[in-house]
Length: 312
View 1 (cartoon, rainbow, N blue to C red):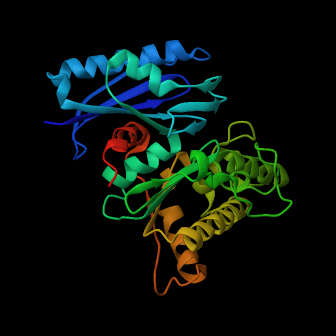
View 2: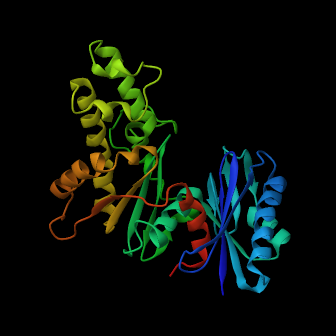
View 3: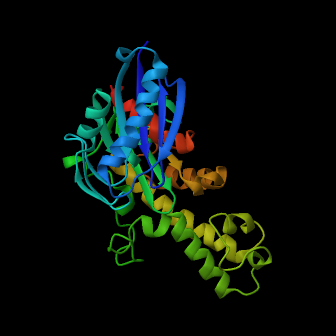
């Protein structure tokens, strides 16, 4: 039997999964993430890999290791070009892990890995072309075309969150103005909710939340009964739809999957977004794009990292 090891490197924890080609899970493991020391990071990954190799029974049954890492990743050369989260620069992680586990290693950006995981084993497994958009602290995601990741020149593409949807608009963490991330992240949603509450002292949102405790659920919780909350949700969906329509028009995937914390709103997001997309996306009468919620949650990265060995 052939096994594949997937590693998802997070800011605090390295998560691992041992799967077969159909995505059946044979083991999970985790260790703390070493920040600022590439050698220690490789050591932690090797610990997980060697545990999985022992579990597999025969080392020759483990085909390879896939890694999803935050930052700009040179997937061709197996290098972390720069990762603010890991405080690493120009570190050849694949080489160092290969030396420790004596297995071939592939690496990609963590958002790309999550997209491939959903494409192979999650909400996108019925489609050849899919896009994952994660709505969390920022807006990330990845693009799968014909069953393979699209990474662009030097693996630096697919930065979905940093296309501009409002010229001269709100400041983004990247330094530009009007980025998709500045309007459709959970951070942007919370910021807009706080603003709405402070503008309307009579808002029902004050019954449960303060401007300090409100979160990405607040406006959705009150959208049916409070005008201020309803306006926040309408604002958020308008900008989110704008970004998704751009993705649909450029890549024409069969499905766009929504992940991250905000995606927990489910049909509160997908129903109005689908209506706008069907109405406004170019050629939607001929090649419609489905909006759905991602299925794998926090496991998507590890599954997708393993699936780097299963791309068609």
